[in-house]
Length: 572
Ligand SMILES: Cc1cc2nc3c(=O)[nH]c(=O)nc-3n(C[C@H](O)[C@H](O)[C@H](O)COP(=O)(O)OP(=O)(O)OC[C@H]3O[C@@H](n4cnc5c(N)ncnc54)[C@H](O)[C@@H]3O)c2cc1C
Image: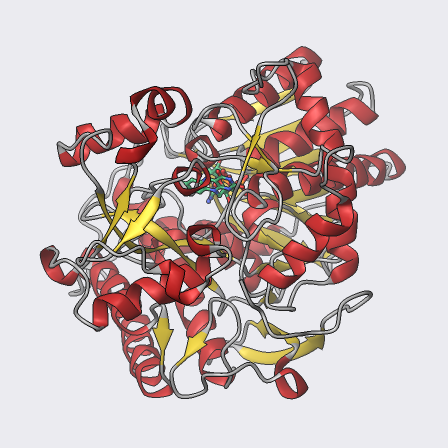
């Protein structure tokens, strides 16, 4: 029998969604719930700390903003693929999340009159991004972490890598994990699970995400029988710093920055005369690529041709007060000061709109499992997320899933038994099979091939031919994966083993993404097909679902919930 650690509620992930869930479960039970928060990194090191620009909420109902306007912006931004009941719940819940964080002590940036400041963000018709300078995610995470400590009821499993989700009779039973510091294999058993493990940004080479964001929760959920929804929709952020891919926040344009081509023209005037640089991300990314392909970009290294993001007219005071991190990043990584010079930027893989399918309350099809944050697809963002709606989503559905799962735990007498045969099979997979592998394939080469295939063939613009090429390459990589060689056989801090597990998840997700993209013969939001350049609502206003099968994903579809707005042409 393995080492089994038992808790009531198990939370996979310590980012904004995971910590918000832990706080809410603690709050509604007045601390009478035993929680496990698991992270493969450390507390306060989840990728959420990198969120820069802001968190959207309609706060100024006395000054021109409204719930309806926030909802409309989100639905239009989603290219009419968001579920409108979900959007409605979201916009009404958000103001309270902002005020709640305020009460818990977050240092929101303030206006002169002391009210919480907000700034413009792309695709929003009102300046509604609440901010803490350009370090919003860091301060949000810190505030939630400090608040959680007050309850003193959560065990923090730092540097614990979750390898599989145990399910029996369609009910959650536990997780298999190994301690990265000691190599010990354990089971974490519980009544309920919230998957809050973040996105899958490192499917791509040129990405804003750190090496740790490898889609583990999505891969494990998929293999445990949960469908992944709308995975073909990947957001390309228009301002990735060239050549590193570090995010240059949309807040730069929110504060008044311009995009210019090599002729010095503000080209967005041509593509979106009303919103210009504050258009949604899908539209700006396509416009940048169009400018570059027409020869009006700058030559960059390794094909990373770029345009300019010009902040020079904003002045030193504004940049230092509102965008200090961006200035620091540009000086540190590109040896350029944005007060003096424009910044080289191009579209960069940034966000997974898709994820684990959930209902409006974040519940999945498996009893006792919820999902929240970037790992989940509650269908808020549809085909294109608006900036500042993601941290907001983590707060709202972190809160909802924390509350719902806590109730479930209170009603359930004890955690169900773990299926020993599945635990044993997982232990064998890790230690007898994977760790002992002496194959001929270099897994880092496979990872490089996967990323370059995604960068090359699954970009801002796609074609059926390129996507088929990508799928062929992914299938080849999948076939070679069992022949990888693990050089490091030790149990402590074995990064070879961790990378091998991460690669397995990335390969499965790449296959799901590209299979969904090939099938969707239309252009909608971030999925822009040159061979099917228009949106086809009759055929495709529906969500893609991908179910795991050994031979590859099986696709199915489900309708979009339309409560208020029928699709119309998106104009900005
Ligand atoms: C540079 C950048 C800037 C951004 N700026 C903004 C912004 O201004 N506004 C906005 O709304 N959105 C922004 N976003 C998006 C937003 O930050 C993310 O979508 C959001 O923070 C994701 O939070 P999360 O809690 O879902 O996941 P994460 O913060 O990624 O946390 C995932 C957690 O899961 C853990 N985990 C994963 N796999 C395993 C495993 N196998 N075992 C154990 N633990 C595991 C990780 O260790 C981590 O603790 C930005 C994104 C980036 C990359």
